Image 1 (tube, rainbow, N blue to C red):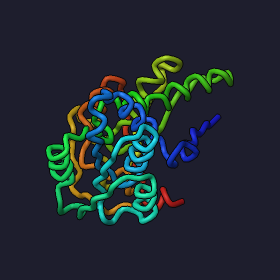
Image 2 (tube, helix red, strand yellow):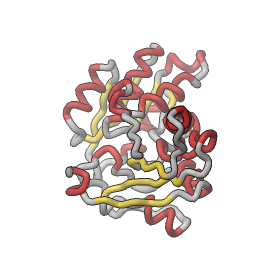
Image 3 (cartoon, rainbow, N blue to C red):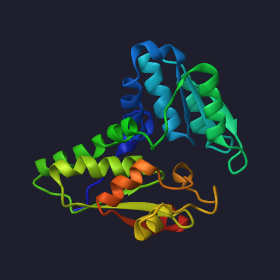
Image 4 (cartoon, helix red, strand yellow):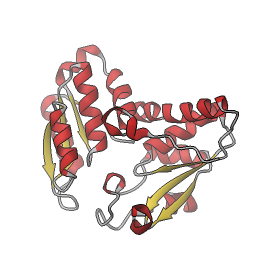
Length: 231
């Protein structure tokens, strides 16, 4: 049997809302008036924007200017202020850091954050519990992987109902930093910042926290071409 977890049905169309809402909910009440800042090519941006809207926080999102127009629009429609940058040219982390310094806002990293990873981990909890309810125990779980927030969270969540499941990262050719990192045991970087249709997962290298978790859980890396993704 092959089971699919359709996170496209989640709020804002991706799993990112889980981590964003969990992390924003952890911000102390007396710090919320300063708002939040995040960097994202679109999915984390929409998740943070929607979570901020629900919780009544101001959100500023740093997004690449070549992000899909629909993601830019939806992020703005959810009430966030969007600042664009040139992918591969500008330093989005420096832009976000300056914004936080100016406003006192809380930075919400898309994957290298324990609160975000915990929120994404609810996907793993649900997979394990829902599969068990059908009389099944997942043997292999594959997730599209950028920085690794979702995949590492899933590994932690699955340990409750499917501790023996093999967790696999899935990345496009040329951006297989996780596959190379898991094989070598040390974090490896990608040579390019763009060049795949998988725009949402083109991260430079694995997140430190996520990589440590996946290494401990003996995750494996899978790589596919853009043609295979399209097919």
